[in-house]
Image (tube, one colour):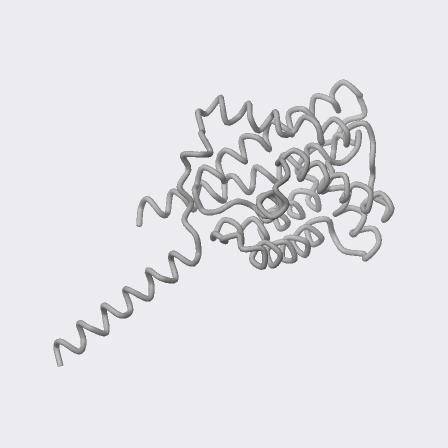
Length: 226
């Protein structure tokens, strides 16, 4: 139980930091990251918050991941909901500053990408499943036989175009983050010595099977006593 509790704590620390990193890149005001362009475009068009847009698309992506055969973890479902919740909490309460100075804005965007890298290390390293967007990337890579880079690039280009047409903010920062965020994640993984191939994820179906065994075992014990 202690080990599980620490993994859950690590997961939620990672999800909160992920939201912090996203808000930092938003407040840099140089251009939003690809998915945030999509979320902001939806926010502008429908009249919901960016966090709510993130949750709605997270739900849709989790359903797609499941239909495409990807296994879901509790971390997948937590990512689906809580990144959006934390995003709104930080933005609506103005907990992260913004700056007029361009040097500070660029520095904030870079620091935001590094925070996203550290957050990825925490939540992926918790071993409770990947996020909905990463899950779709993996599923499409398996189905199409194309490279991860091509699949991710196609996904992010698509959401940028759709988000821009809906009114999302595209700028030079959008291009920089589309190209650079992966490298910042890689730097964080190297810094904290995380090998994603060594992470053993625990999935929801495993816990359901385990619960079934426990319940069957309890029933057997009761029958034996009778």
